[in-house]
Image 1: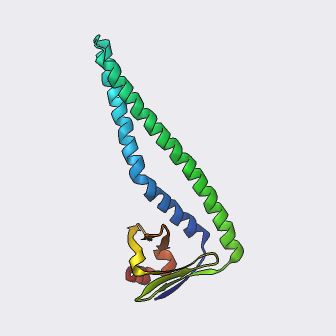
Image 2 (image 1 turned 180 degrees about the vertical axis):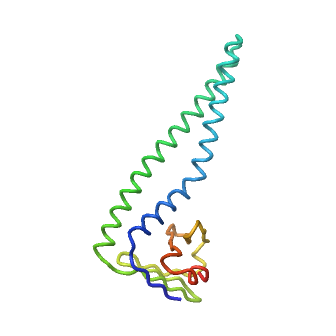
Image 3 (image 1 turned 120 degrees about the vertical axis):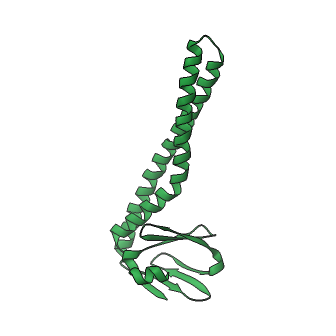
Length: 162
């Protein structure tokens, strides 16, 4: 199967936004739980301190530590998101300047993808899996490259075949 896909800025931005969110989703969920545990520990610690027991200071310290850790991770997430969005903007400008199609060549022996700046030919064993998120497929490889396709780019029949 050979798929030729013209560059679409809206799809490209959507793909990358969904991909970024899928990477951070698990981390942010866990850190949000840690923040809630930290708040609960602080509340219990303060109530124990009011009861004239010094063990409450330990709970307040642990809770504050959890909240500070959440804040550091969330701050890192915001910085990473800002950098990622700048890279997306840069790539959009480059793709629009070159105005070429990307080609997905799927054979029995290998997977071949190429566009104006990337030409990758991999055996199927190098692809580690795929994820379907809504109307997009994210194909992961063991060399750190992922490939993203959407139903709107290739049509429902090709999407289901893929």
